[in-house]
Length: 323
Image (cartoon, rainbow, N blue to C red; front, side, top):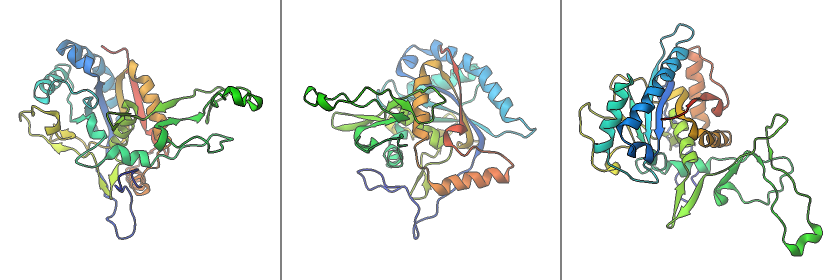
């Protein structure tokens, strides 16, 4: 896969390094993805959040243990510091970890959302965007510019644009939008993946969340190498005073199960439901590295596990009312 506009390559060809496999847990359990206002509200807001997450996290572990196996479950937490830089890792992260511990939860992996855009110099988001293959709705004539130009991705047929007065002579009757895979009635979604601000592309929360899901499923590669991989963080080590000094993804527990997993489960505030709908639209139209998919399928078969063919069917959610 060739990344749009940068020349960065996400592909495997003869003569290039083989696609490297990654270790896999059974489930990657996300314990939170909060916004700036949640952190600014103080420890009490975090305390309420983790108190609501705890019973659902216990349930997710119970489900993962179905069939009598000893489940490998890793936990993660995503800090949204991409669009708005607030506080510092040194001031914020000890509070997050302390409130999670107070609720009886352990965060194994902690990530910065900006790492879903660029991680260790690799433009991850652009690489994923270059792999998008839009699902053309019936009757498409190719007149609409592709997602790489517009920054918008839909799950079906958009309403045709309104013609000008001069062209009213051949105006067509209004058509409703339509979902490609509708079950009688459509739930149409047109999601914005990026916009331009100050001469640079700014990725949407929905698109970065889709990248985050691909990372948790172990499906991101750059020249055959995994990207957004965890960096061990020594227990008790001070966090830096600047977000850019913190690796995109850190492993906080030396005994943690692998970061990536066959399936993901995210416990999130219900206000994020629209964002996660957009995530599924993206995942349904991304052309993932075939060898990475094959590696996961072979590993799952070797463990006697069933993994859905569709990427979006590998992710699940628990939406609560939020703190």
